[in-house]
Image (cartoon, rainbow, N blue to C red):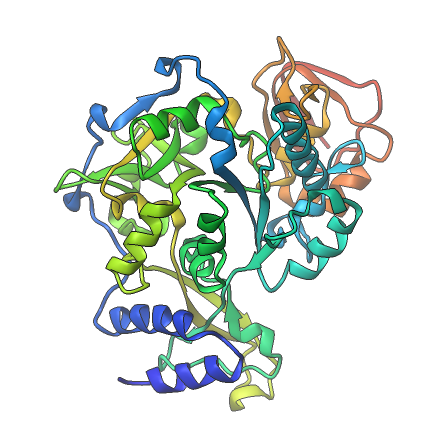
Length: 447
């Protein structure tokens, strides 16, 4: 069908497994049939309140079910938006502790506290695997002998926008993209890890992003999931103006919950998409998955969970000699899926509205500066928490001067300022910070 065989051959030559080739083929055929990955407001409803479980309504629970769970951390991102060319999780967060240090130490403390094995597994991409595994050699005790420490996210070939053929740059890495974190289901199954976890008596996984240090295993949530026999649970938070550009929770006409990302929203509906009074909840990307239910769904759908296609349009820089053209960019499509979209696939799925402290993502350098500051600390369980009384500081740093991690480090080389009593801080132009500086209230510094 069109150029599908060319894609299949390219993937086989690169050593991509047949399951992943099947998944890509599924989306390529959808694409050729006119699927643009859009989801209109006419196809969805606001979620019924009975579909939402509120964290504060869950009573205190036991710790018995912790032995049934494994932790999976998504670690495929390079942090390019922060000027990085390696795994974002290698950035320092508190003192010399990186994201990876904190995640590993959290896990080791839970193991010791509750006398459980608690597997910790990373889903790396082909870009982050080597750096991550090399770093984790300093923690040999985190390895569980009969389980891998990581598995690799698959890769899809990029699709040229002009003729729908595979991109074929001289530098081969430019021809491929990670297929979004929705690939986790295929990757778990394809590498055999899903079955290994089940054979070991692991019935659930808690999945979250490495850059969200608020995402820790919570026995209250786990016990509620086990008690109510929930197949799939997504942690959500109430949207604020700061969250309006991200994906939101909705409900299909048939009553099933669904996740809509901004890339799926028609352009003429963006204003309503961002209306936090209509769509009140956003996905934190903290997911709880029943592995037996996942295995059954993969069997039911012949290995390809029906996640909505997300078409991500990109431009790839090429040398002028390539393709016989003088321009330095080729427009491509990247086929991606979101793992949270699986909420509409499972029979008994729920959204759990959790406190904001379970969502502390680092997407920009200003997010990292806030964690570096005196507003946050590591507690005895090695969980990063906001200090009592610290303000919900809103930072606005000029991306031209603070967009890369090297720029931020240079700005803070003489010390990190106090933000404990700061409601908002806007920096216009370039400003260097000094140790002992204190910002209070609403501040604007202009150079």
